[in-house]
Length: 121
Image (cartoon, rainbow, N blue to C red; front, side):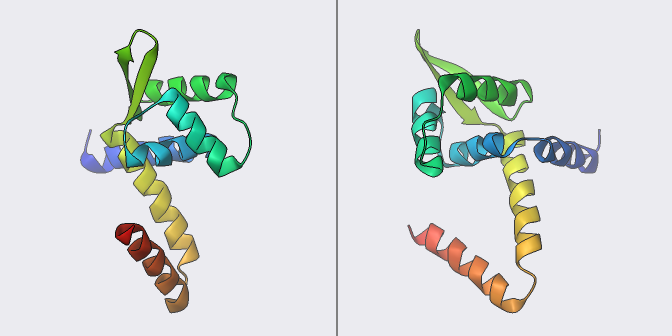
């Protein structure tokens, strides 16, 4: 498979994800985390409780798709980490969102300010 085909496949996978799954990928972009830490991040974002029955099946789906790698920290705790394919899926999504939002110079400046603020944090 060529590099272009591989990128198209990643884009196709990323575009079929739910918003919840995409948010999990974004959270894992920061660092590898165990399930309850991901749950807390999602609850902070949604300002609502996230049930285990929603989180873990979605994490398993992301693992199955090759976007997230699951490893055992101890007998009761798993750690989840974004794969390179997962990173590319996040970038594909960001590229699409920025491309749709930054339609003029002012909006492009808004995006630059957000990126600069994130880098300074």
